[in-house]
Length: 518
Image (cartoon, rainbow, N blue to C red; front, side):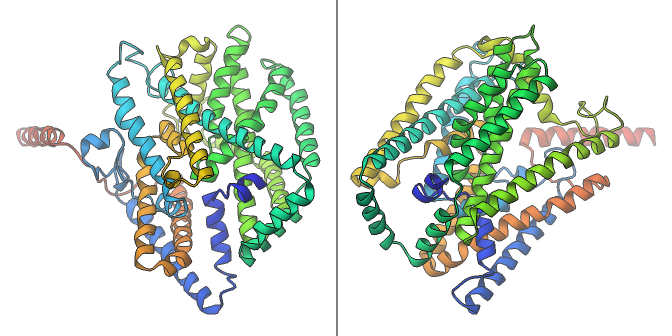
């Protein structure tokens, strides 16, 4: 916690946005600044919400709306290079460092514009041409392992760097270390020193954290095999033993880009434990259970780090944030089963919930089940050369991280231009779309600072918070409209010249047929 927030100074954009929203109402700069920030926040929030409402009217069909706007042409659109007009992603881009956002774009170009077209040329030769997009037998069998190789290489390097730093600090004399800390503290502003003091003074002791985690892991290890006989107690124990390392990796990624990799590691756990248990012993169910454990542990760790970042910036007690998280998780354990039963009743019974074509089809559930079914066959389900291509990805991650560390240690000029591997890996999983939105956010801040640096530093986080919150507020009205089956009245769609000509011919034939019948 302290390493990521105090040492690495990771932003955790959602947590920073929440803190910026709270601090805008309690700024120490005076009433005039507070009024300016609140007015800017309300304008940004209102504009974002209004834009979300406006976009909804044009989404009355599959692939309709501004979210499918081919800004860079139809060929780039086919590779998912387009701007989807998402205010929340632009806001996140305004908070994230420009180098992180440009690393996202670099990773998108390397993956979607270079690697995937090359691999698509091997379709039918290296992998099954008829495989579904979510199947690990197809192109996804390259995307997921290569992305995970980059993530693991980066996170193992960062973990090793943290361990070395901790070992060095441990061997220094306490007084000497205290003198260094005091000297570093004097170079910080009063607000930063106060935040650090508050954050460190109310932290939870390490032994208490470890004991709590061990107790919860022990409870799950005892009871989960009783609920799901396909998984054994040692499988659950291994899940909880490997989860902290993966949680560190995911929290690091979330601190950089706001993206949690819990679901990615969950898929990896499904594949590993499904293959370990085997088909004859119910490996598919065991893999899904193991994946659920990993997703929950990693997801909670990333969310908690966002809360701690908010606590650090707002001078809130970290223990109170942790207690709130515990209370919320406990309530979720009670409410989620009730919500499941409610959806089950609305869907017409257990036989229809989650089925394809039903009211609540749960497509991701089907995707996870497909991975679990394939996992029981082991690594042989991956396409040809998939594992071989993971090796250079892992080595590239280590080399780039080593270059960044050496450049930072020696003060080289390139230290601010070395790409961030974790950010580059994200588009391997989710595509390039959001990278363009976030780069636009960075460009807006850069141009704003060139024009008025003081105003940009004062209001950029406030504007970003408004964009994120306004876009999020539309989720509730849109959900209510979907529940009451209110459809958007229009569809805006972009077609190629060939598709337009085909549609024109179809309309001419349809009109001629109507004339003949009349």
